[in-house]
Figure 1 (tube, rainbow, N blue to C red):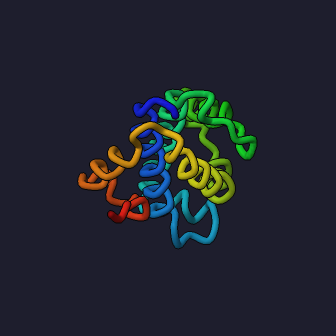
Figure 2: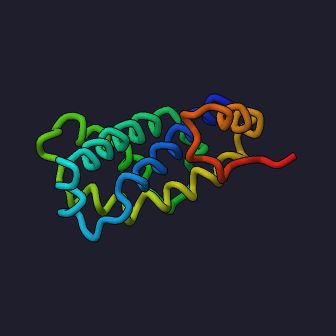
Length: 141
């Protein structure tokens, strides 16, 4: 079992992913997404990608054992966006949303049972409005 602190990092990333899916839904391509609402959706997404990259750095490396994703690229993406905000390519962001976030979401969900006391932490987190998009993690008992 992995340390319970990992639960917070995983849940925070999952919530960011869900918000990105909300902000990017309904757009046919990256250009439409980029310019929508005076770039509000794009800028919110970029900010959440930074949060994902930062939280990823905090998860125990041994917990991130899946080969389906290059975990170091997630942190590198965060650094690239943070240090070169004006140079963030909308095509790259769109590709991350479409191709990588669904995989990351699934891997994170699979991590939760490997974390000590994650069930209790999930139950408490879901009582707060911050994690409201993670309703699918609801544990029935």
